[in-house]
Image (tube, rainbow, N blue to C red; front, side, top):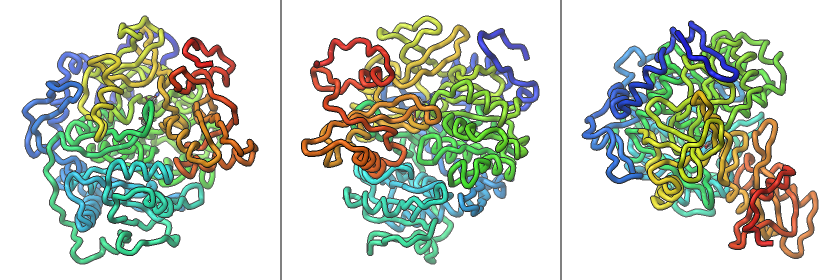
Length: 630
Ligand code: WT7
C-alpha cells in the first residue's frame, strides 16, 4: 500500500492490519461514497433485513426534517437478533458480562433473543404499546440491553437515563418524556459500593406524575421499598406462566421513533434527541463494521455505558447488527485493583477495546507495570471517544496497551449524529490527537462566522454539510428548537457546537465546545443543569458554572455562587452545595470547586458571561467585554 507523505507525526498502519481490514483502500471507498452517497448508503442498507424496501433513500423535501428510506418497513431488534437465528450465529455468544463482584453471565444469540422476547412480553403485560415511552434507569447489567431491545421489538420508544444521574435529572427526563413505565434496578455495584438506584427513583417519582408502573430488576439484593400496585419485581412477572418466549414483533416504518436520549445543550433543559428505526440502524451498522472492522471471530468491548449514545450505538445496536460478540463490564476500571480492565482483556481474549481519553489518562496514572502483568496480545484495534485525546495519552495507549501494533480509532461524533462522523479506519495513517477525516460520503468543514471555509490550521466552527442516515430527526416535542439550535446559524448546514481546525492534509483537529456544554470525563453536561441545581438550594441566590482544564477529567466544573441574605460563606457550606449538586444531577456533575462571590459578570440583558469568568480563572484576557454591564 502506498501512502502520500503527510505532515507532522504520522503512524502508518502495518501490512498485517491492512490485509485483515474490510476496507483496505480508504480512498477508493471515499471516492465511491462521495460521488454517490445515496448509492453507498443504499448498498449498506441492502446488507440488512427489511420487511419492505424503500421508495426513496433520502427525502429532503422538508429540510432540515430529513427522512431516510421512506416507506420502508423494518424492525431494528429483528435485525439485531432474529436474523442471526437462522445462521450459524444462533449459538454464538452475543454477550459476555462480568459484574464488578465477579459474577459472570453469557448469552448466545438464541438466549438473548429468548430473554428479549420475555422482557417484551412483560412490558406488554404492563400495557406498553407501540409509541409509548419507557424510561430505563439501570447500571451496566445485561437487563439494560434486554429492556432496550424489548422496547425496540414492540415499537415502544426507550429513554435511557444514565445510572450516574440522580433525582432531579431523572425526574425531569421522566416528566418530559411522559413515560408510563420505568424500568429500574434495585441497585448497581460501583467501586465496591451500591448505588441505590431504586431509592433515587422513588425520590424522583415524587416529583413527576406520569409513571404507572415501575419494573424492578434485582441486581444487588439490598432491601428496597416496593409501592403496592405500582412497583413489581421483574423476576416475579417474567416467571408467570403466560410470559412465554414467543413475542410477535411490531413491523415499523423506517421513520418511526426508536428512542429518545437526553443530552445537554446550549441553554435550558436537557433536550430529547430523537432517533428512528431505519436510518439509525444503517448508520451504526456500517460505521461499526468498517471502523472497528468487525469480523466473525472478534470479541469486542466498548467500555462506555449503555446510558449514553456510545452505548446505544456501539454496545447495543451496532455489535448485534453485526452479529458480533460483545463484552459488558459492570464496574469501575480500577476496582479492586488498577489491573481490572487488563485482566479482563486477557481473560476473555478481547480483540477490540473502545474507551474514552479520561479512562486512559486515569489508568495511565497507575503506571505501566499494571498493564504489563497481563498478556494483551489478543488486542487488534483500539478506540477513543468523547473528547479530544491529548497526544501523550494517545501514545501511551498505543505503546503500552496496543504494543505499537493496534491502530487507534479516534472517533468524533455526538448524541445527535448517532454514528461516527470523523473517524479513521484501520488502514488509514494516524496522527495522535486527530480523528483524521470524515466518514466516506460525509462532507464536513471548518468555517468562519460568515460560513466561509477557513484556511488550513485556522480555528472555526465545525459544520456538517450533507445529511447522513443516523442523523437525529428532531428534538422530541420541540421541532422549533431543533431548527434553531442546529440549522439556523448556517442554513442548510448542521452546526455541531464544536470548534475545530483542519490541517493541510485535510485532517480534522477538534478544539472543544463553543457553547455552554462542559465535557467532564467525556460526559456531556450543561452549565444550566448545574446552575439550576445550585439555585435549588435554599442558600443560593445565583450561580454560574464553567469548565476549567483538568489533567484526568479533561475539564472540571468550577462554580461561582452568590448567597442569599442571611447565609454565611464557609467551607462547610461549599461542601454541602457540592453534595447537593451530586444529589440532584449526579456525582459526575459535582463541582470541583465552589467560590462565593458578590456579583457575576453579566451582559446588559442579564446573561451571565461565563467566558469572562473562565478567562479570569485562567489568568487570560477576557477578549471583547463591550457588552459587560459593569
Ligand atoms: C461532543 C458530543 C460519547 C459519545 C460521543 C459523545 C466531543 C466526542 C470526540 C472526539 C474530540 C469529541 C465533542 C462533541 N467529542 N468525541 N473523538 N474528539 N471531541 O457524544 O455526549 O453527545 O458529546 O463530545 O465536543 O460535540 P456527546
